[in-house]
Image (tube, rainbow, N blue to C red):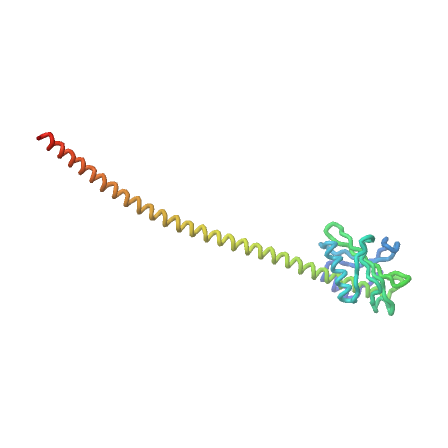
Length: 220
């Protein structure tokens, strides 16, 4: 039965219980070989593949390329002292999208043999640590990406609120202008009513003046 060190158990608890390493014979470009496999929950294939390449470059200074024909990420002659024990290691990896999760399978070619727990009991835990450290990095980067996404949503909401506030200010200014227009219109109506009354009075006086002139004309 496989053993996980306390270090690995702590890492597993920090990442996710699904991110556990297990052995599995899988078909790959070199035939059916023993792989170390793990599931990375809530991730995307492209994201994990890109991180895997960056991870090996950061920790082992190796270039990892995606073979589009085989669909495998290949790292040639990697210096992994704790796994290779003086020899370089060829590392193959496949990244598969399984619904919302990603399944990462890694084959360690030690040169004539592929890493297994039964045959390489002393080296196997180091490969587990390598993969668990990667799972931790995936979790960290994924969380950072999620944080960035949530911060962008917040920024978008803040911008939307600012636009709404600006629109509200324009509405208030429109209301003030409308009120001023109404106030002036009301004053105009009141003045117009007075002017109409004055004019009506003048009309009546003018009618009387005309009537007086007519009577004078009739008296002649």
